[in-house]
Length: 110
Length: 114
Image 1 (cartoon, chains in turn brown, yellow):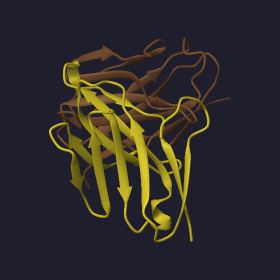
Image 2: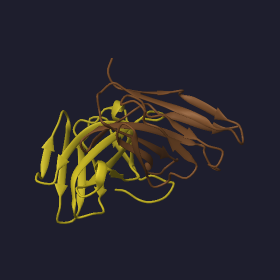
Image 3: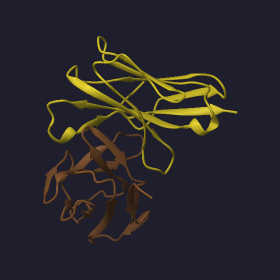
């Protein structure tokens, strides 16, 4: 079963806690992306990686960190510095300009 | 069409009718466009794409039209079904952007009445 998987589906964060969202793809795509989606708004780019061991900040990188140690995996850490983390987080992988999305992780703050 | 803010534009159609969803894109240099469908609580699903050297592209029950003169993109859905109810949004790509970054619109909510 090919595609992009994200886990967990729901994640609860306590104040001051770092949490990590998982994203895995078996599509052999070089590029991977993390987006944040807030109600009624478009997708905003957090971080992206075009190749293993390399990544760049997107438009709203503050309070987030990523790593890209394997082609298949691009985990996102929401740090305690992110003061408004409640959102729907979407991971995508891409071939040339086209991007395909995972099912998303909804992060809620306790 | 697209708009900024918390309230998405809404299109309500009767089952079996054709739907037309519009998108105004921002950059005249954009050369690649994608339409996505997003159902509630799920990730966006790729529907169809088009390059700027084309005016029209057809898929299964869907057609995308591109008017570069007025920077306008539309998605036509034929014989709309209840399963088509979702938020639809367009994305544009600037050829000179590194990494093929896409710029996304806010979306239009399609509601299909049975």
